[in-house]
Length: 250
Image (cartoon, rainbow, N blue to C red; front, side, top):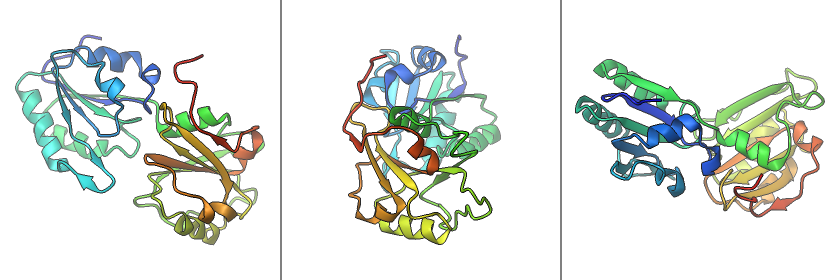
């Protein structure tokens, strides 16, 4: 696609593997005048942008803010009004816990045209690397995505007698005991399988398998991490720990 000057492209960078970047996202990066990227976006993907593009890290990670959300809005609007092609590059998919809603509202109020380019979200990369289906006919008919930053610890499954849910918690933090207590209080069974996936879809990916009952005894994995919880995890022959993926291999 030919990018339009004066437009902001809210673009999903995927989980980290450049081969999981969509063709459309790659084409936009190769045309960009300005790339405003999150801190979690892999360096290999930022490097795919046009050689002359201005690359600006506007990431906020682990509670440390290099820039405010309002300043990000201002940068997008400023560069777009100057007639530049702006790629706002977000880890995973921009519409899943990427604060895209706030940026869409800011661009709309400023009268700046924008396009959303979806990407592969971390949950899908984590499940694919782990080798299980999040919506297995024998284990789960419902998929719930939530953020650990604002997660209701009352995430309930008791309305489903079979607990046929796969719960994915983004940004779970490192207090696994609190997570465990919240899940048990919400009606999850102690023997429910849990996967902790660190750096899904990247070279340094790590996967650890446990249960809700043992979650409190699990050492936190490096951020960014994601939790996958549910009976469907037990449907696949998973190893207990996979230190890394075969990156770039089919």
